[in-house]
Length: 160
Image 1 (cartoon, one colour):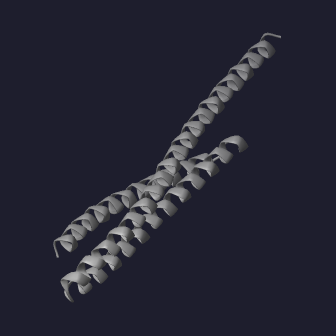
Image 2 (tube, rainbow, N blue to C red):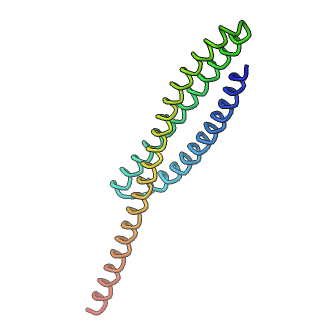
């Protein structure tokens, strides 16, 4: 019974972490959508490709969060099964706790892999966002240079 309580506490912690990850993913996705909309307002093809990569990274992050949530649901089912079996007998309880521990360790490994994938997706998103900003600055510089060249040409034409 103590093991079940311990597992329930661990599950609550995992559930809270998953909720935070999900909220962060939603914020990132909303920010990315705003950036994509801005990027599509006449930016270069290269910048649009960088934004598409950022969207793919956000999709990857969302998939990683979904996998973590799926693992949470699996862990809840395992805990419920262990709680029912614990009421049957002490010997059976010990066997089920060992089995639950092995299942939880496997789920933790998968969850760690999902978290690593989420971190990689977030890093890719950050890199794509940085590339978008870099391209936007380059585009602005080109526009300024073109405007200056046009103004210079008009001055020369006016002088002629």
